[in-house]
Image (cartoon, rainbow, N blue to C red; front, side, top):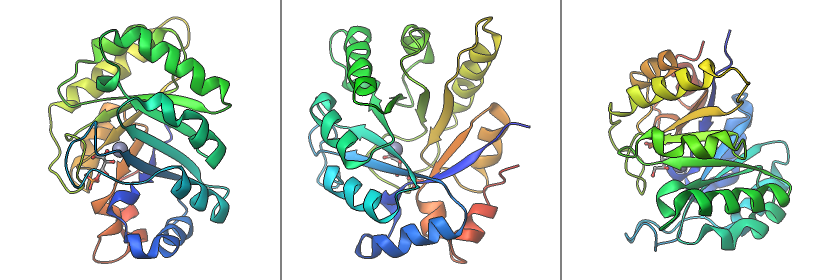
Length: 231
Ligand code: DX5
Ligand code: ZN
């Protein structure tokens, strides 16, 4: 059977007790953490100013075995590559909509730089962006993950947009119909809870990012993970 995992988004954690929150993740057997990096520019709201390389470094120092997925919802993401890699990021997920005029060319050169820095690279698309747009990038094999946003990025706790269900299926079918093996994981990000998790797993998601559902569960994080219906 396919391996599906949960990846907690620390955006929804108690920021005044990040060490305690991450320890709960480790205790619940989780191996991945999702760090939303908002710079207040690409996402222009007062809320959208979050974590930088120093936070990543602090997490990595304290919890060196955690896989740190860094979601760069920022303007000019290239400026963070070296600092994030040095801080202990495991993978940088950049936002397709931040790529500018010539997104494919920009994404390719960005991905190459990420790989040169010794870590892996993923691409994220907004709910309304068609998966067809990123197919040429996936064919380059430079990225090993697609983050399908099920909410407009910027805030935790927003409702899941079901428009993404068909996108997950399309991507999964495209990946599995290739003759040559294309190895990229499908991550779904935003609005994941005990109801929506079922349908995204059914459609082929490999990684479920959840913030609110995991960190703000009334019976604690382990129960919250159980609620996500991971097979
Ligand atoms: C969306 C972020 C998500 C967010 C998910 O802005 O990219 O990672 O933290 O949070 P929930 O699970 O609360 O929707
Ligand atoms: Zn994210």
